[in-house]
Image (cartoon, rainbow, N blue to C red; front, top):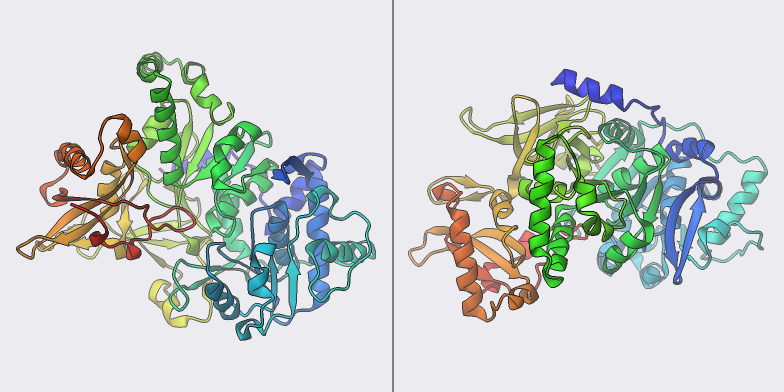
Length: 585
């Protein structure tokens, strides 16, 4: 399989970036007048070119450098925009440490995280003014506060205007100050030390439990420079950015990879406008989590059902399948109306952040979309493995990124799976100010224990079975990964979300239980309404699924939730917040 990987990287060979901001700077030299970002602002369509955006980043870099901040740790929080990305790149270009924060954090968490990360500067949108401009002792270390105001198109932010010497300047004022420094000969991007800390990222968790992942530029470069060789992305591609920017998956794979290749990125700023943004921007590439991919597939089926075209869809799939056996790929023509709902140009979907079911990937690819499943973790910047552009393997999350080693640490030689252990240039520097937690997962020889479980097949493909911390231990001593069973349940019609856990039977023994949040509207159309009817329906469907599972993995109890599951900003269910008592049997 080493030969296979080498062939892939030769086919997609291209120059590698030598710094994170360099991904932008190199492409700006090649494509100065090309749009780097497209977005909506105040109801209008806007764009900014590579050259204009590069100048903004360099100007902000000069302005930050002038401030001579003690630690140069800059917190960044706010709605998605080109300016948010400009601040991220500018801080790194100036030799600082960027600390992207989750927009879903509450006020107390934001303040605590800013202090824990030793931030002496913060850039924030107006949504968070109450947090950063309050008299809060936890924010007393802040030497610089900057309001990330987007009151004009990004393209014109450096237009000549008097510099406002406010105590809390707007980003535009800071940028214009930096532009004058830049024009006066100031250095906007000193020679980088790509081995030092550049990005601090909080893992999921509340204040006191979250850890701060330390990434260097080289960690991110390893991921982007090598990961891009697995996907056939060209400068003609348009990415649609859907996921939160503070998440390393979206920032590395959805933004930086696009900049590295000279692509255009369309920014979706509200999850409710994703479908309209597909039509507005006509993207060719998107990075999603499996939940979003599932929503896309269900939208296709729902539309077909409402328009009375379910049989047409089935006939089309049968026809395209027959043609594929003859070596003719007519999927994009046969399903042109389906693809039109996603802008008509969408061809590549990268799915990461969690394991995606093989059935869902196969269903989406039947319509002519290439789905490349990937596996990553924040501590690895985040890329670890990915399905290459010319490989079909629906069950695997990919081949290891070139130059990286993966081993499976099995507790017992007879175990089918074990913990995934990784070594390579993408592995983090450690956890900030937490040597004990670092020692728990990172050996002195650079091996990172991921906490994810899986296995490698004989061809080197990696398969994920679940998170080690989520494993369910039954009374028999058998270990069950709930994620594996959830993959079988999610395709059932009428399930919007589900989670597998254990509950106690009347005799005190544990039983596997499926907690389901139904798609009430879809089921209503099928005349499935009321608690009893819902339970009867799902019990019957799960009985069919149980026939495909080993006895110890079979669902014995079904519970119905009336409210959505609590989720993270990347749409993962927060299992620790879910109680089986919330549902109804």
